[in-house]
Image 1 (cartoon, helix red, strand yellow):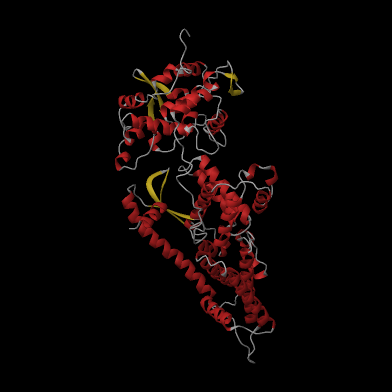
Image 2 (image 1 turned 60 degrees about the vertical axis):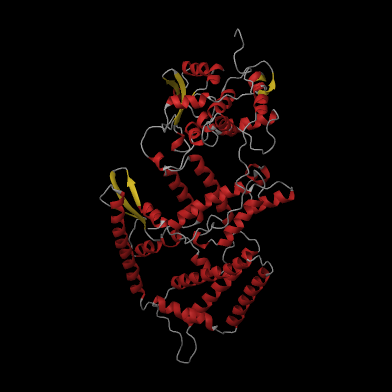
Amino acid sequence: MSRYEVLMTDLWLVKRKDSPNFFYRRTVPSDVIAILRSHGQKPKEAVWKSTGTSDRKQARLVMHRLNLEQDDQWEAVRRSAREELQGKTPTKTDINRACRKFFDERRMAYEAKFTEAVVAEDRDALPLQLTSIQYGSLKLKDAATKGIMLEPIMNKMDRIIEDEGWTLPKLLANGQYTEGYWAFYRAMVDAIRDAADLEMRSARGEAAPAPTSEVIRASFVTPSKAMGGEDTTLAALAQKFEEAERRSAFKKGYTIDQQSQAIRLFVQHCSPDVLVESITKRQMAAFVEVLLQLPVKFSSRSDCQDISLAAAVAIGINRKLPNRSPKTVYREISGVSSFFKWLVQRQYVEHNLTSGLFPRIDKGRGQRPPFSDEQLNIILASPLFKGSESVLKPHQAGDVLIRDWRFWIPLCSMFTGARATELAQLLVSDIHQNGDRWAFHMEECDDEDTTKTLKNTASRRVVPVHKTLEAAGFLKYVSERREAKDLRLFPGLKPVKGILGAKPSRAWRDYLTRIDVKHGADGMGLHSFRHTITDQLRLAGFYDDQIAVVLGHSKDLMTTRYGKMAEGTFQQRCEIIDSVAFTGVDFSTILPRAGH
């Protein structure tokens, strides 16, 4: 069995809270739903059947049988619908449906020619392709005006009539074409000319050109508006996807927020009312180009509000604003790609249009560098740790000692290597004793008032409190929070877009800039402490798999999937943390002075 088949198996086998057994779940194809609805039925969007077993291997065997049976049932529905059409005189809706299918085929053919020229970097071929398409469209119009039918189109029509089983006479007794056949031909010509028109408009930069012919416009009408079917507009399915993602337990809220924001940009670019099956690869490529040309932080600029993405690009060009990074665009296309994978799985579309369109990025860039001893000394001698002018001006020297999250989160990060969000979401109860030693307990929690999330399973860990952190008064600070009956260890922090670690990360980058440690986009931030302690532990002689235990790095080993106990003893973790010496770094500014 291939990896793809295994993934599809896992997709169709699901667990439900009300049963220990696996269930077979499969989305009903859209054409089957349409047929059943046309017969007055109200079909469900998905089929659910119990496999009768909680063993995955056995469930897979049952799943294969159910899969074959389900395919047979759906094929029987389709066969019955085809039999009903035998000998049927085609309605206007039937003609529109056939023309729409032909329209899609022609657009794909046009797009394939352009793609071939682009891949071959034959830019001169693009204008020639446009000229060829335009000439063919004019030739069709001229022939139809003169009452001449072109043989290639007639051959296509004859195949459609035969495949659909229609009764549509071609010739009258006098050898002239019937009015019904002529009507079908004119509709086919409109479809071809519309496909050519849309391709030319798209090639000239129009984001989401709409069809102009009546026959194709009629086929673009949303099924929910036309016959009570499912709404397959881009906006409707984007909303449906977001709702499904938020019900899932596999993605964090802020990840879904970023993903949804990228999809909203795509909806804005293409138009909310466009049907997903009509979106082309060319439109997706144009979207990527627009994202790359948008100015930095365009969404927060007052002059870019309530305007199209193309207009925002024009503003950026006119004012010579810097463009957003390919890394940002890469993340956004990843969000849109997740949406299209979902569409493919549920048979709304055939292909993931983002494939091959991700911008190239240098994955080596943007990595967080560690702090040097010189930089750490500058940080520890700066006003935040030595004395500030005021609570509102922590970067300016004075006599005010700030001892809130701004002081403690950087120090905790320095001596634990913990992530900003892990520290920001800590509860007072997460700092408690293991024997005679205090420790941080990094754990998840989904209570309404104390929600905490971790990046992965390995992030659930116990990290001893470093002796220098104790000497700086950290345990005294914890005791004060406990006496104040605070729930959170850093009660002054509020989430930004649902992320508690966002504010300290941003504030620390700003502070480093103000004290001249950070320069532009050099990567320096709270995460640099994570790299710094890694180097310290390597200097102490520890291997990366030992360091991973205290940093919460996941390790791709089969052994890590077994058992429930945490790796390594608490005493071993103490030895690892205590080895962090920071030789050459002066901590006198954070340690109590003699007599105090």
